[in-house]
Picture (cartoon, rainbow, N blue to C red):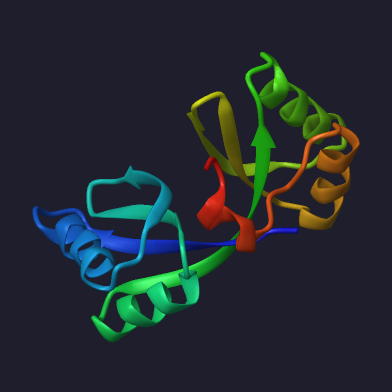
Length: 143
């Protein structure tokens, strides 16, 4: 079970991130989690949000380069070592981690992870005893 993540390509200059975030604000689309990486010429903004399909259309309409990526949203609690367990399991199964990022709030966490072998990764995550949060539950997650 994966969730849709938006991968947004931005020129690395002042104002481009603001433009994208303003689009989300004006469309009343709540961002759940985000990550940004940059190089000298561009940035890559990854966003998990409520209603990613509508967000995609809004961004595309505004001329912003955007693509969908499927990622796992693994639910975590306060016990130390859960991320290490997932990473170890993937490593032992020879599944590469393309990237990952996480958030923790009020004793609960989500680990967003993209793996190079999604079907095998799903099984490894399931075997760790952790749950993948479905996209439809993300808007209410943590409440």
